[in-house]
Length: 146
Length: 418
Image (cartoon, rainbow over all chains, first blue to last red; front, side, top):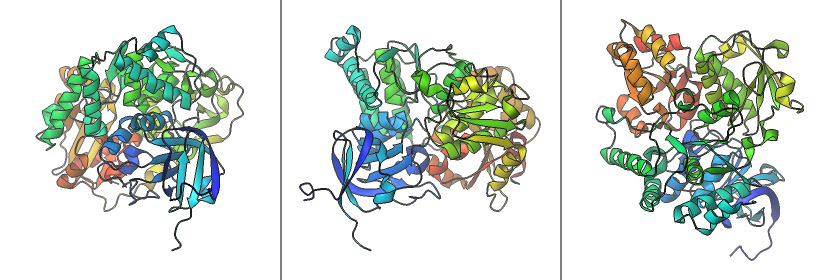
């Protein structure tokens, strides 16, 4: 229902791979590792004190400034997809190769680098489209007012 | 990416479906990073265990093995999640144990050496300056790039395996000269005296510079060489911690690592984005920052990375003739080969006589069924001399406390943490 409307806002990304997806944005000011931060059996961020502690990543578009660690993502993204708890896309400011290898292996959209900084223009709950072939992220509608 | 004749043949499927699938995956990854070509590799090291792969990964691996997939270059496995001798005592789920056995069988069928170690660089394979390899975990990568001057990116399990199948890796990241140059400096105005001190330095440097492309250049005060040349185990703990907290894949150390004859040489023309200085007070502040809760702790772990023979010897000496406190557990993890040698030398006997548990072929934070184990055992706090472990185990909701090796032993013997 949103796909035909002009985006409210466009963010350019520098590198991208994977399918075009739409979903609810989850914004984090803290980096991410599936090993350190995620309960890989429930899909909930479980690291005590993580800025997203208690939040499920399932079907979300996840925005992280950096990648933490870690070799685990190589298999772990494929695993959480198999378990039905994977996000639709990972959007990183700076990532590392394993996140990219893992996302491509699992056929999950992933991007790196951005302009403008999504934290300055988006908020959690916004509905966005990640379009790797066009290297853009588009805001389709704002989060409902709370 | 520009492909040569051999790579085009692989892409066409002339070398079989498994090779085509591997190179297609590598081309997708290489294209993401703007790699212009492949470089040949001489060795690979991969993570592959049921804890991280899950049923989906096992199924994928079975398909590959059944299709006759064969690794073309030497490849070894990283630490896994099960020590088969300890399954019953740790109450790990039998179904998962059986899956781990299947993974090992599939990997061997594909010509993978299941060595199950994260210290391959100390025990199995020491690449030379400029040698391209495809390694993971991160501790192996940062050691290869920094200490040996070899060239590798962080390679996840599927990616390292693909590299071994095709015998090459896309040329991006730390395969390139420009990425390997240092971009900030760290003066160590301290003589670290324990492995935990080195890990603490890794956290102090890595945490505020969290980026794969951040490459610190270590020196003594004023860019001089360090007061004392560090040992392999010390560099191991520094590197593992930098990789964990900072996602770093490389560091330079003046007078120690081969691409750092001086600070200027290591920077290679880069202007440092930051200049840090670390003192004893910084390290002590970090130790003081951990929350010891009620001052009791019934879990002490020496792991991450697996212990070398030298580390096993030291732990055995510190425990000699003493006893782990009733109700407490002390875990040590090492490789299969190191455990054999340490058994011959009497170190393992001494650790076990004190009540310590020595696991082989595994690393503590990836143990299968760790969260239920934690609940069953009543573990809340975890004391360790590994800064990496403090960081990597957090998803299991431990209250982690970094302490120097002798302080860890005291906690194991008394149940008290100060």
